Length: 344
Image (cartoon, rainbow, N blue to C red; front, top):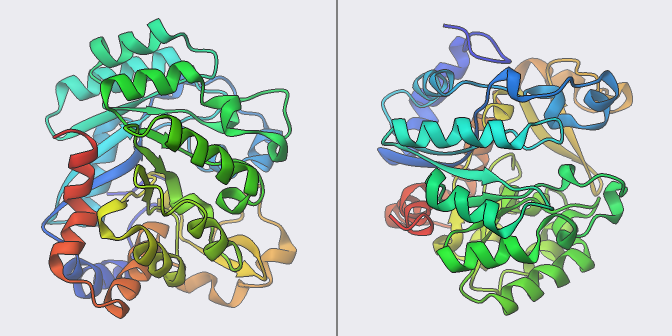
């Protein structure tokens, strides 16, 4: 069976899972970060957008049945429960995409979901998604802000007070992707997170991709700026630097970390590498956003690249082993913490 984006799993990839990754994982996993949706939920994606936005260039539709098949190929005998949300890019038709996720939640026992919330969504509209749509969390996204340059976007531009009120009232988390070039290491972003955490002490904020602080000195600066906030958690997808995982585990503790894949994007054969403080997506395929000067930095390693979800797990495994975490902590990260956040 072929998989989206990468086609068939290679023999070496299967052996790495069987011999290295699989034995390290618990028997039950919650993937806190996956995307589903149908192609008709999207407006046309231009070539310009594919060059400026990595995510929308990789994938923007995946039916739920295909996601299940992906889990079967990637995780084999592991039982995977999942938290899905629409593809969040600005071309996505939020209402239609949320309806598809809501129907999926109702039809499958091992699936929970977050609704995609636009900055101008009313409190009444979001209340309806929670009460009628059976959603367990809120997914705002900076790409849905228009008319403001990427480096000028504030969290408050796409996370409204109504959104926070609804999430706080229903005790559901907000799954937060941070903006700006510095991501979580940006002082303004950190200040906003601290303000939200203080104003809504019962509200859980989950930072996607550990705030995307892949390279030093952003790792320490970003994580240290918010890790003391007890209602702030981090999700692990797309990170391939063991030092990021080690610092996050030390500062957030295993109790405030949840595992995620960001499927289907993490099917790319890819590793996130650093050129000084700059992060680079080292990918086997030549996507529109791949710059030749960057590719020269990793061209010799192209054929050794694994699916990003495996690169992520190998890096996480290395960090966990170096910190000597026990099996109970591993189970918290991969299963129990997610269910607690979801109120299960």
